[in-house]
Image 1: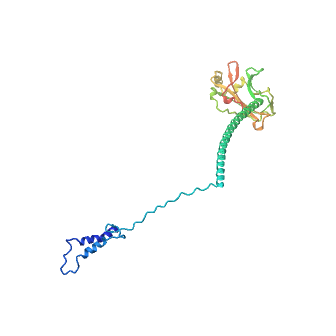
Image 2 (image 1 turned 120 degrees about the vertical axis):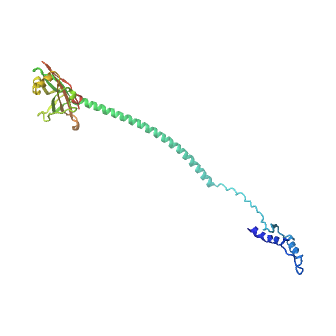
Image 3 (image 1 turned 90 degrees about the vertical axis):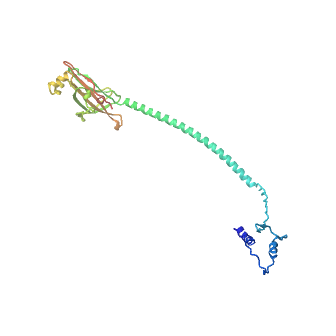
Length: 295
């Protein structure tokens, strides 16, 4: 924009001097013809203070370029305090590195000791469990065990007695007994859980204590009892032909006299099959596992 403003007068002056646009002066004009050349040539005169022409106009004064060089800073002297601080920091860094190495080594040792302690604890737990099982087996071996057997009567033919014998090493006290008689095709027709009707919780009136090796009679049964059990001749015939079977089952509850009160009570369940023949009879241990349990 500055160059356009500067060049505008020059363009107008150039257009004014165009021969086609200038009117011829009249003879009466008093302006000398040499006035224009004198004014046009006056700017051409230059001296020492003349300025360079920039596109028909004066140029600004050129400023000299000044180069300033800054000298390098002088080295700061290393004082004794700084040397001591640097040495202390170096010692601290070395000490920290050594401490990290020692800490890692200690952690590894602690990990090895922890693993060894875990292995020892597992071994101690297994040993304790084995000791507990051994103590339990020893206690079970020392407790009373009432086992069931069947013995024929020495004085009555075809008569049998269910007997409980203490096969343990400590005394047992009989608490109660229960029994039941059922007629079924086979033992699979018996109920899954034994159901007792004649449960004698107050039997016997006098407490029976069985020492190791002693026995007591639980249930007697003979051939004559079968006639009272069968309600018809057809039912007796089916038993004689082995189409139906007679099952006697029950349980005996006894107390361990040397055990804690919460673990004193034990139970023995039993089941027998009465075999009725034409002339002789028999009574043998039989029945499902639920009917022959020991606790």
